[in-house]
Length: 449
Image (cartoon, rainbow, N blue to C red; front, side):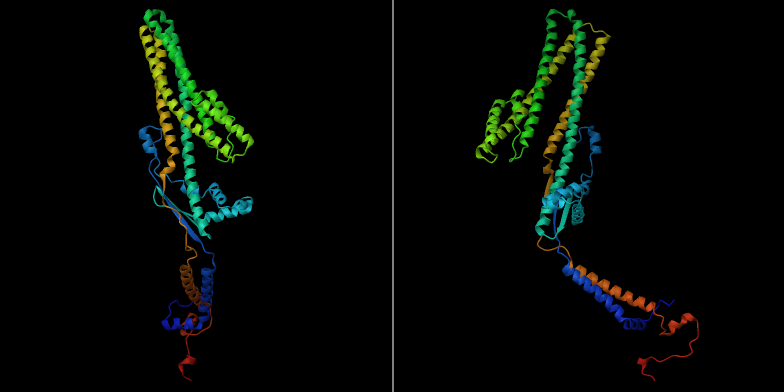
């Protein structure tokens, strides 16, 4: 092999001999980079930055201390998973008017891959994130960023609300189970006390009748609350009906049967709307007026029911306290045996568990109600702007990089051509043969004969 050390004159000679090997690759690369800088399609970038405020309540499923320890530190840990998920991109395509592509599975997969590459995300901390989108159309880039941010917030809220709903339903079921056990335990205790009722003074025997009255009143109030719950579900379905859809009146006709406030007014409004909607379309003015009347009454009844729920729940708490006091008075006046003591112990345990479960249910409902308004936690601090200058291609970067690559490839090709050239030009080229030099030939450029 040749010695890798060269003098300046030798390097100059190499470049002089291999100038074509230097120039041709350099010209080719510079030409390609120049064409690419001016012929590549222009890409416009639009971005938005959103701040997630700290307003999450503690998980009511856990104790206070454990809830503090288990509270997630990284609330945006699933940020990229949501933004780059297939359902999110499909919704984005639908918003951008790509319904035609959606019908072709092959084109759809290709477009999803293309859009995924056009999305760029970054996080500036544990509570803020940035979404960028590149497109050949400035307006579409701006719209895509806005839709992506809305889809992320919507998906995040749906996940949180689903978790909150599950928590509320879980506690509701547990509260019902404990209430049934409490009522069974109480019935057993009252039956045992009734066996000793003859031992009570005549004036105190009315306590047992009071217990029965309290139990009947509580059962009536609980049935009323159940009716209220069924009515709220029906009204919620009606309230979510869009303005151009016909309201489902099948269940709204059941509202008067549930004995809720303003039920008669709603029945008349529903009847008027039903009669008009059978004759005219939803765009007819009289139908719209009747529909608005139904919507107003639905909202009015919802507010009235929630107020009545609170009032009746307070009544139940008061009646349960009175019943508990009456039972305690009856037991104290009787000759309690060991069986009665066991029944009382079971009753006290279920009473305590039920009260605790009611508190947790209230916490879960509060958490759910706060979650319904948690969209306010996301604040757009940098809304997407309509880009006026293309972000790609970067002409200066492409041309500068192409020029640097051209020089590198030119020198590399010249060096490789020189290395693989077997002709003898200098004494250094013959040293590898370990033979003596017997004569030197003068260079044609030296001027000697």
